[in-house]
Length: 94
Figure 1 (cartoon, rainbow, N blue to C red):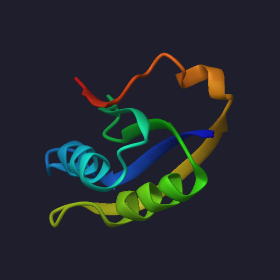
Figure 2: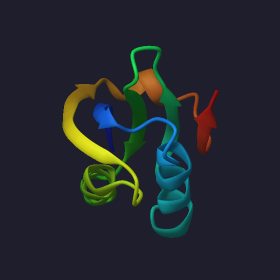
Figure 3: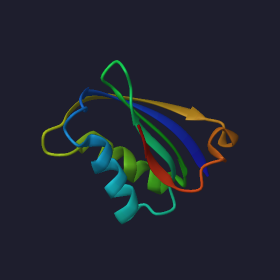
Figure 4: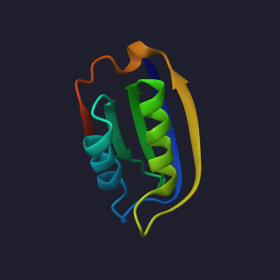
């Protein structure tokens, strides 16, 4: 298992980005746990724990985003696994 934090920059708020990521995780990546959340500066934060393949797939989805999104950059930081152990599923934080 691997834990990562993604900071997604670009036009990613008010375009359905969080719902897009949530839906992709629910539809294709059921083993991923964590959350997606808007940040005050206009970026989107995604923190997840899962296997390498699922996280790689999530990163591909994150780069694409929904139709109206424009992802300029994603900063990826590996976290220690215990940072996300409390998550039992994947959720949207408000």
